[in-house]
Image (cartoon, rainbow, N blue to C red):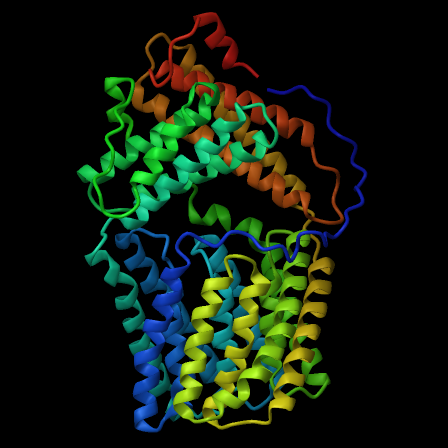
Length: 554
């Protein structure tokens, strides 16, 4: 265990970043999947309601249709389960909102209900790691429902419409399984291979090697989670598992990895061709496939308490501030605040800047599109479909760019019940955006996350325990293969969690200085132990036993 002295406890000064906040990144490799899915999920219900002359019900139909944005990175067996829970979660939030709207006309009470719903949705989405778009879409749908004129007698019908479109969204998202049943697992494996190749390019010591190594282990962990969430093992899955083990081996010994071969394997996973057979160096290594280390859901709820408090307080105050200013749609401010909260203050600040910039530009786009949208109901529906597609195309490049499309879409949705004065809509949207971002960020600063440092200490202790357990197995003359592999995976997960915890804590304010030196030492010793374990398993070329023993030490 590391004996490095603790760092001073004086809280360091932290600056909020501006450089790079609006910089565009590379688009997601599967940007077209949620983009096409959401259009396919929205269009049939919307045009059906258009034909029936009931565009006023589109908001409830879109509640279910927007579930098509979720779980595109999940294998289809897991995707089916996740989407069911997303639809049920959406129905629960909308149900609570509609009942509240039918029972009270007090805007302050409705804002309070919306804030509590937003906090619950934030915690559940983060704890279950449902993935993008996370809680924001669910909060948008439930908050908008709070301020829709409603009676108790109408609630069952509106919920039935949302449930029907949610079921249609489920079918849309599951349909690609008929063409490429192992597509998500292949993409996750390819991402792990590419990340391992990126680390191999650094040789384990070059510029950016620590970040590349962390990204590599995160990608490998995601690949294992993807593979192990599938149904019964198949020949394709076993072949993919061998490739993930190859990525793990490359991360353990970057100087001995062939980055070109790793990228070639990743490229061969595109399409529906056969999965390359990457034989493992040790014949018994096939017995190790399928071993995973996972953290239970309840263990992820505790660290989310500050986020829940920030979300509830920030959304409530943002909504109250909007009401105080006389804005007719306080849920816009509430949703803006809900969209800000990330893992730490620094990321929350970045999201606030992106949200404001994207919404302001989006309002200008709305001004340009209004004449076209007002040509008729069909034009209004088509404009909404175009913006829903554009949002998913752009949002993976940077959140603010996606907001440029989300904002006019949200403004157009309000016009399904009847055309409104554009100037008023635009003014209210800008004011609510600024109010929500400002008040939401102030709430994030006010609700300090002083436990971030404690979680780093716990992550350090967990990494040390995992390394020591693995080292003890290595010291045995003939360790049980499954136990050794389970220990190696557990150590890899612990090191990945340590890096994620340290990065999250580094962006918090008002806390003691973090033990950065101890974190680095724990990572170094842990990764040496991982390399020694892989070598003991026959996954790496043999080395001198004394050197192997030394690798397992801190």
